[in-house]
Length: 117
Image: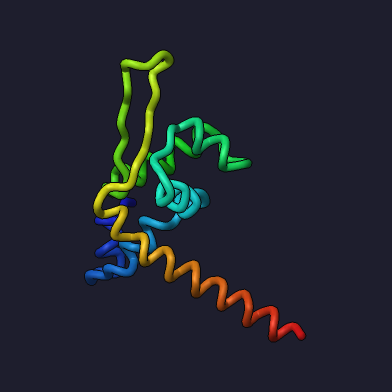
């Protein structure tokens, strides 16, 4: 299921489901955070995602590509051929959403810590 099909998952339009679908996946949020800082080559991403396999990274990138959140550039002029990824304009429009979610998550964790005391 991609983000577009998630829109009608409950038999009614649900943009929130589309957003959640785009961000769901074990590695997508961290991939997007990496790409918010700069374009990344496949290998750079793989090395920075401890525990992520090549196959899983390729799958998560494909889903983000299919949802038009990132774009892929293949440079055949280099040896070996390099593949890099960057946020699309739609992907860049997710940055404030991701930052707000990060802020909320930090607030949530702080509240849980306070409740433990």
